[in-house]
Image (cartoon, rainbow, N blue to C red):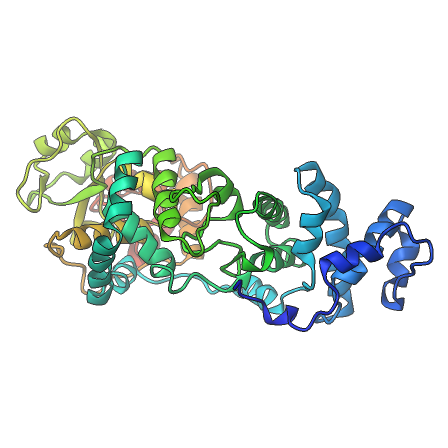
Length: 440
């Protein structure tokens, strides 16, 4: 049975009843609470508003939100129709729904994420999570075999993403997706057009009969089911792995496995290759060489003295990047194309590294040989933004001031560190920012 949002319980008027009431009857009149809207609308808009009056209850937080919500849904219909959504699907999707105050609250008060990468990774490499991953590898072996054969994606990476996204379906989120996306699109200030487009994508999923309206659940921000795809990603990458005629990433584990695998394949997964390896650096490693060699063959890194921590050879011709998530004093990794494929799932390096390391631990790879700094520190988003602006002002190539540490920011920081006589590891700390801020 599809899970129902509490706000929809007890709604007597269904979508089908509303459709019958919204026929050609000239005697039909709106309830008083919608009179002002009906008076202001054109004849076509008035007809749509009358139908929506039956579909959408107005037990909302404020009358203003009620008006915003109803007006938004009214304006959405022509866009949904143009996208191929039927009136029946549209009405069923919004039947009994209202603004979700919880979503408004969460959208307006998201805490800044300042957890260090070490703390983030440790929190996702628990003994229980690793043991659960190994058990799931056995439980779903036949479907993982099929996904690996069809898409070429490492089964252990599939399992690691599945674990981090929804704890293998135990924590997929229970927010009504249509309600969440409609609330975000109509009643919050952050990227309303994006959420409107995702809402239309969600309606197209309903149109294609992959799930019922109230069965479409996920995170409060609109991410769906066990894979946590946004609706537009679902339309592009979700697959019917078990062949039952629907793409069900809520209840059908084979579809979950296949959809994650297809997503990674479509994002340039390099079949048969690993995401990366822990490496050790020589005692007098030349950190200034990083910028010149990033994206070069692994053999070039080997010539600089970089070696796998387990003593095995590096894949010589493969393009590789040196990643120092905690700077020169922390563990080091040589990462390959598949690291970037994983990162498209979530652009956070903390997330991507956690997926890679969790996949390795489920595979049976030993724990890291390198150690994290005893007093690891991190910059918050405002500090990173200040760092980017300062580097840009000094003439370094920073095109996007976004408060995030990406390859360009690390490269620019390494260049400045080398010029300033610091260890050019590209690792931003409060001390480095202080010195950078004073630079001229």
